[in-house]
Length: 155
Image 1 (cartoon, helix red, strand yellow):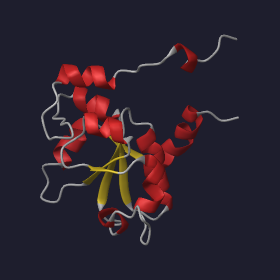
Image 2 (cartoon, one colour; image 1 turned 180 degrees about the horizontal axis):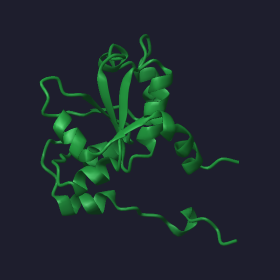
Image 3 (cartoon, helix red, strand yellow; image 1 turned 180 degrees about the vertical axis):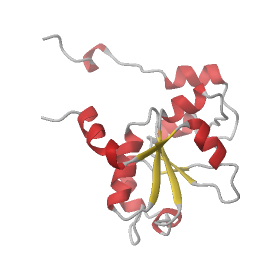
């Protein structure tokens, strides 16, 4: 049986990852990459990188293709465009980038360390109203909050 981390490990050799400081540089280019945030709506609403587009990972395949209710034209027409996929910690984004590569996207990368790393690098995050989110508030929002019933049972 495979676990979440096993799936990520299988995809990593095929997916390019970039660090937050690399993304900061890319965003200064004349043609910055498309930022694709694949977190859930509540996560995205709480804080996001400015100018990112939101497509929850569960809708990714349909959003990336034409003729679906979930089609995002910017994605469906962007198979040649540089796209950086973002999640909270850099795991879901690896899986999403791998899927996009299988769908024919040529220049897709995953943000290593995700939004957490972006915040640790002290880069701007905004809430759904466009207000800047304080770094310490973002740390709390991004902290792991496991309940006891979510933890692996003792052997």
